[in-house]
Image (tube, rainbow, N blue to C red; front, top):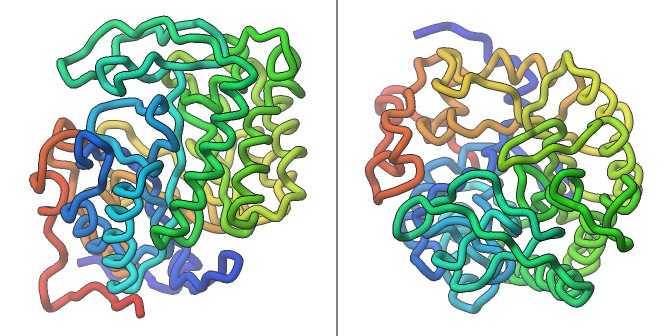
Length: 373
């Protein structure tokens, strides 16, 4: 076992608004497809997150704010009483284990299918996803989404606000508005998925309007100090082409930076890239940074070196995904330099029950996870 120093700022207590965090490590939101077909988190989901409660903060997987926003089978949702009850079971389990949670709110937009949600997908423009999509009956061609009307836009914004209130009712400390990874809000931001000619399309100032209005509505519903925003500049996943990232995200950051939000969450954060450096200078509050790690494996150090680089480059909190997926006690492993578990089977990341989900081993009883109370 390594004797890696535990004096890193990664393991220092810090704050996030009124929350006291025992360390600067955050579990990034990761879709795991373990909810019921109706989007209700199960006892297994509660066990999974409670196992990982030593993280400074857990950002729970994407939950849809309405039925039409569903992306794939068995993802979570937060728009019915059953969803609230299911998530309350999760937050209570995590809180009993000493943890804190935000919930990510995500609308898929064109990343959806009628065979999954029972509804026709909505999007900024009638431009389909340029790839096949997973449905309950297997992968299918994407359908052409219906372009959102002004009323669709208003009702979707209202749904985000209602979902945020339900998340707080379910015991979450706050929510993260997902404007990344090619989903609905990112589709409004991007030039190839937003061909609108009204107040929500065309210029950069108009393309950022929908995200800004969602953030405003959610902040009014639960308080800005409970709201984070996730972005992924330059990310081309799900067929996205934003154009020039710096002017786009400068405009968005300018719009939301004075609202008193809990944090800005930057994915694929590379401290050597100008867009990261620019946004760190612009953003006045807490920056959560999700580092670029190998796509096919967990680094031998569990991502610690990448995390340390981002802290040195001005990030406040570090969000890790797959390292936490395979290592419930990742905080302790990084602290003492213990070996990390690899992801055993990528297929099981997104399907199944306990296997590849709650059955990853922790350190031996002689090296217990540090209590988080």
